[in-house]
Length: 168
Image 1 (cartoon, rainbow, N blue to C red):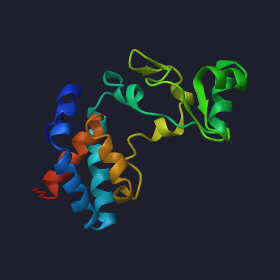
Image 2: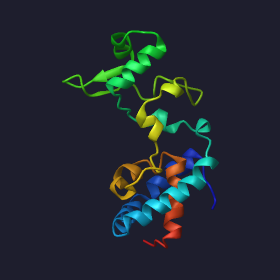
Image 3: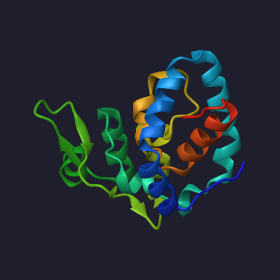
Image 4: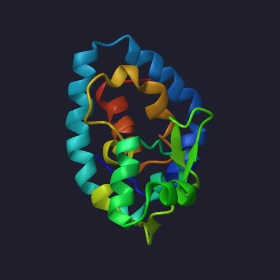
């Protein structure tokens, strides 16, 4: 398996293969979900160790991150600031205050492609790109929307196409 990590190349291929990836999404939905989960997790275990996320940081530069109340509390404690102060500086809230997201893209806490709050990072950051999680077929839209952005997703999906003999 040839691993591609160049972000410009992955982004260009992502645009070029948009229709193919939509067809692949439909193809995957016709497959046994447990078998697809097993394949994705096998490929994730092969690909992820070969990708240096600190050489990329593209997820931190391009994703909107949801924040829970517990994560806000943990971050405020870590930063030794009040929750109100942290919320005012880094968080945007919805009309009912229960929906919270980081207020900038890229993330405030990304420096030199590294997370400055890594041990306190948000659950969405911990889980991304989520290939280790079950029910891959239920997350195809979201996963494939990151195909041209994340070297891990890109390489796993391309190897899946090969292993499943997908031909558009």
